[in-house]
Image (tube, rainbow, N blue to C red; front, side):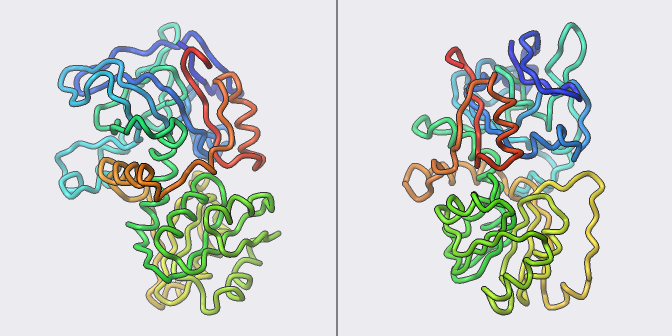
Amino acid sequence: MRALVWDGTGLHVDSTIEVRPPGPGEVAVDIAMAGLCHSDVSPIEGRISQPTPAVLGHEAVGVVAAAGPGSRVPVGQRVVLTVLRRCGECRHCRDGRPTLCPASGRPVDSPFSRAGDVVHQFVRLGAFAERIVVTHDQVIPIPAEIPDPVAAMLGCATVTAFGAVEDRARLRAGESVLVTGAGGIGLNTILAAKAAGAEHIVVVDRNPAKEKIARTCGATEFIVPSDPSQIVPAVQSLVPGGVDAAFECAGHTGLLDAAVRSLAWGGRAVILGLPPTGAALDLVVRDLFHDKSLLGCRMGSVDPHRKLPDLAERVLRGELDLTPLVSAVVPLEGAARLVDDLRNGRIDRGFLRFGSDS
């Protein structure tokens, strides 16, 4: 089968990848479409370590093609994928908090191989492949009426952003928001803040071309700083006293520092962007003195099996429109161009199309 493989020096389509059948509690999923998230580019940029060769990708929609013994998902079911694996038995799983389950971060044996050698599975998914094998709790049924790009986005960018805004920061109507980084996660965060009734949504991005889509999503102000040091005074001039919630969506410690220092008393700063491995924050602890919070946030800090169906229903009811974020849909062979467009800020969310017409 074909898959998009990162070998440590280049990204290429490989038609010699093999995938094993699903084992107990697993399913095989034929991928229809996969979104390109900046996290998928992080190994290429050296921001995170990744054994190679590896099949990248983690935001996708497809159809269950085969099910192993004990799987609860029927063959033929259309599903969205999640990176989260769970044991189902620990107190975190029982409390509906799978992002805290110890099993969710453990290494797994990759189902991919090439000429008998292991090909690694990026973040326990490796969704840039025609077929993948995952545990049955990594797939979530999705209505057929939701278009493939929107369905794929729900599984990562959207559930992460809406979880961060609604569940982690618990944003309330009338509060003010700062969003740093207007990529796929950031734009979904703007949509979530607007849906929550935020009064001010201040967006920061170094790319002025992002202003149009940011305002389409709900930004009320847009700042293009030449340096992170300009952010705090700019925010304070727009929202005297600071913002109630700040969402760092670019994985940049300078932006995170500015986000913390832009908070009002009682404000919450939430980390959504993936920083480089080993990145450290030189935090002035007294900046948190007035009941301010710095919050980590993994996959929205929610149970995707509960949150994602709710988001899907909001899409179907017309309350949530993700289509303006869909910038490009290309066949697998167009991946290199899509990656280049993402790294240079020319797209908001790009997608790889699989199947016979790709």
